[in-house]
Amino acid sequence: MRIISLVPSQTELLYDLGLGDRVIGITKFCIHPNEWFRSKERIGGTKDANIDKIAALKPDLIIGNKEENTKEDIEALRKIAPVYMSDIYDLEDSLEMIAQVSKLCNVEKRGVEMVDEIKSNFRTITPFTHKAKVAYLIWKDPFMGVGSNTFIDVILTDHMGMMNVLGNQERYPELDMENLPELDYVFLSTEPYPFKEKHFAEIQNYFPKAKLMLVDGEYFTWYGSRLINAPAYLKGLMREMRAEL
Image (cartoon, rainbow, N blue to C red; front, side, top):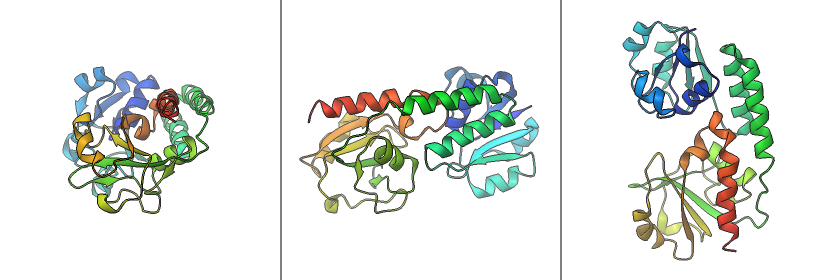
């Protein structure tokens, strides 16, 4: 089977499923694992796949995602090969995707083992009970955050036990920073915008009482095999937060 992946987190999943040489093409954003990023054929970006290049690679299966890829690209790619599309909103969606992809790629046993490991690791998280108020920022100029109906919101609320103050807004709203409610925490994600500590002073002016924290966006958004280690990262973040209560 010749496989092309259009989604960074699902590329990493294919690697961890042991698919090796069967993956013949990835996007320029598929940075994990590094050995694939350096060696695999790159077929454009997640939003602008090179259709002609993909056709020339003669894939048997193309793996995409509803949010990551464009409808136009997927319609064109369906004329080239079967396309598997994931649509991820919560942990259960992620586990179902892992099971389905592993079955499609004939590594079902490894997929089942991975799903079981992720479930077991997420059960070790003890959510907060005091519902600390948080805003999770993903972009700057303009500032954008994470609202409801997103994978990140589920991680924040269901698994960490926090209150997402943007939960009354859909998806990824542009923010009026002057009129947000009082916050306990502001999470600044390392992706898609690469927030760094140099941005703290500007954002702290909007929320003088809030604790600003730089968080690894991959552990909040990569819904493939990275979920195995996500609980350990989240628990470390929560320990840091509890130490300040």
